[in-house]
Length: 215
Image (cartoon, rainbow, N blue to C red; front, side, top):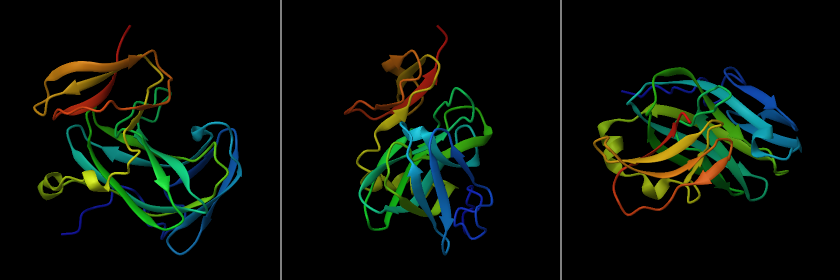
């Protein structure tokens, strides 16, 4: 049985249906090809979030997912990909990825588990600002992971620069939990708004979770 793609129109067969372009302090255009999009950067802005291509996805607490996409660029560049709460706080759900694009189509995918309460309008965002290089995207998907998926170990297919998270705008902690959910330690913390931060390297099995905290 084919698994349902939770990204509406992830193959762009219906044009830009289900997607939106957000120019915050720059300018770009999304140009439709044959089930793919090319993004022409006219004004890059200063920050990665200055230019965003977004869609809404529905996530359930405790569910594990596989996110996948194909992309290339006119010349090598990085791209920020986030799945997060669509609010001023921008609480990350899937740990932001900074991926390296090359001039050839490449597959990118990773798995994550939703650690927050259900969110029917979570934001999938491709942040492309701060860089003048145009790029292309196709075959975007988000699917519920099966037991077989979870047992595969996707480590070799996760982009080498994927060890980043997008810090919320409110005070936060990076917490390390055991595989059975018990809190082991707080690895990092901040006052909010620090942007993309690198995960620490650990030689222990467990799960790192970004949580907002009250001061």
